[in-house]
Image (tube, rainbow over all chains, first blue to last red; front, side, top):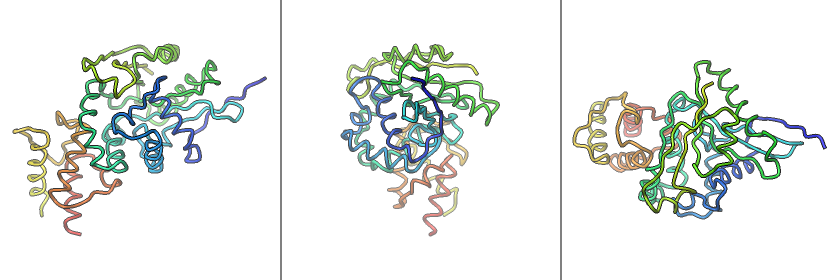
Length: 218
Length: 81
């Protein structure tokens, strides 16, 4: 059976698939949803929160519908990736914090201070001016079709057309996500930095204790 | 209230939240310029400024805070409203 692959810009009509993408990418092949663990909310509560944040479409961070490109295979949702250029709209971490603060509530956000401080150890700063690729997800039945590479190439091409000075793309992922690492290496990325936490209980909040920064010069 | 007065108050709030005795803020200062101004302290700073001035920022206001000057300008606007 022939497959017709289409790449399209996400719109609010794709919100449910974007939510699935963000959650599955965040879980990184495990059952742990870091947002639930950090903010002490259920997955259903996070889905509701995420829906509200996505409605705002705040560009420059990963919880933003219009930052996503979607791959359809024969018209069916198959894969999605988000991207932005770091610093173009402000620091992505601050933009996301603003969104979480507003919709989760300051009290709930600040109640998670200890968890946030714990995961801070694994924070890898994003380079201002570099393309950031986040929330990379392909549904199981569509893996092996090269969809991630197609989406990454399309994201990079679109940013390059818009901002010719952009010269680098970055992906931050959990180090234990070996299949993703191989996929990104095939897409021309190389491992640039690895950070491992010394805090024992960090795996209560994140699906691993080590993060990887991969880069591609474009 | 002038921008200089608000900047002076905000500087004291930042020193308190960031636990820094020495901190020189200007209207152009951004989070990237201040060691320790991360996502958690950002929310603590917004919370402290709101409590100090008894104001409430909207989401579409805080996402436009590109620097300390933007924050001060928003405080002044709210106080004069």
